[in-house]
Length: 329
Length: 305
Image (tube, rainbow over the protein chains, first blue to last red):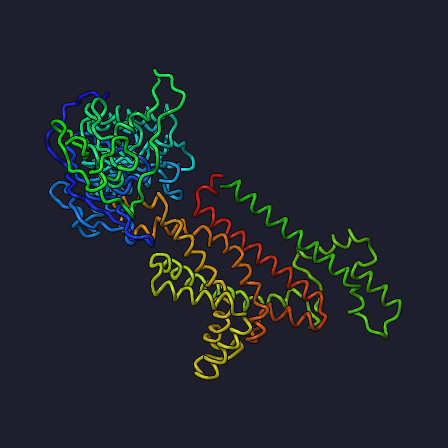
């Protein structure tokens, strides 16, 4: 379980009824279909769900990096520090990226530009957002590389990505993410392609960085182990919507949506001997052709008639814990 | 980097040596050169004396040695047709070909690269269709036909450009366009597809996430990566443009090496032809070497390999 950190009540990021649709030849894909959440200062929010549930599109929407066309943020608000990111012009948004809201992407092997040195790539972000003389930029880049524990940073700045290991590259990506002291850092499965020991080191590093600068983190993952270790609160996504939302304790101890229960049941446990791992029957519904009622109805063990008629409203389970399921009524 | 350059240089040297051997073998296979130098009234004595002068009385490996020794000093013998050293004739004609090749190469880059970038960035728009049209013509129209059509339109119908020869500065336009169009088309397609791949990559996503604006993304982050495939191709292009001008030089009566090769061929002037082929090889290998160096400059993965 996550150590209960003293969470500031100040809200940094507020997402209201965000909808991101993609127009495809099969119809409109509602990749993100009306999600709302907020993020407080110094807090870590986990967004969990299986592949294709809209986690990454949520992340890209927050950064306004949805490829347009075919994608489009149809409606909603993303309020960061008083500005609605959805309403900003492309140039204004570019000013925000990296400075107030930053991103760590999944694959360290492909996320650094192969033809520029590590130093160049870290310095670039600083150069864009901070008006500093050349030498100070280099010094700041070096400092941030030291912060993410790159050994012998002063000699490695001249290296190119192909000269570094995956773990080191992911540290560099992290360094780029925090280089301009953003308020919100989105980490999209940042450890998926790292091996377990490197993964643990990296997660610890992120935690330390967060503590240092009161950073708010959004952690996108499908790994409940990471959620337990890293997050304060969790939003469980299914078919483009948040189906359950609560503190880590609530979600683990009292999962209220059948999908959350099923997800937790499918996590392998060390202390139990089972023949087969639990898996959820069936496939998520196609996002271009969502059923009328609850999108989980077809896979749900406790499905009722009502579930197929109407999408369940948000029900509060306890303070700060809510879920969308008819059985909670 | 040094190791890479040394390796490339050695490779270039080996290429030149192999070509010289092929040329030597072909010249011996194609018959005794004395048949060209001597006429029907020559005696056996003339034949033997000529053989001694040309070194034909020695074994083949020694003959090759003599040939190489001459080649290194720039001595390829005498042109039969012009009765003066091959080297003099080649040096006289080389500048015209180099000029044409360079201009055509520049043209192919100036048209192909920007249009390739635009086609990728504005995929599916009118600009992209225009790019496809230019590429289609360039890659499907044979140069001799394209050359005659351009000549017909711009020189005969409009009368704005000279139809052939090398007189004024503007007489290079038609042959250079004819020669360069194919490579402009190839560059366009290469840059376009490389650019599309790169723009879709994770590091472009990360660069945008840093707050880099779209213009810098395209011109700095994407372009330098998208340059790698066309640059590889440029090694071939540059050589081919400098040497592959046989057809175009003939169509436009351009007084360069390509036309010299054709003239030498028809006149059975085989020492001259041999000299031209060696010169072509030298130019080709030099161009490829220059491109290899540039390649290493652009792509650090090569530099440190």
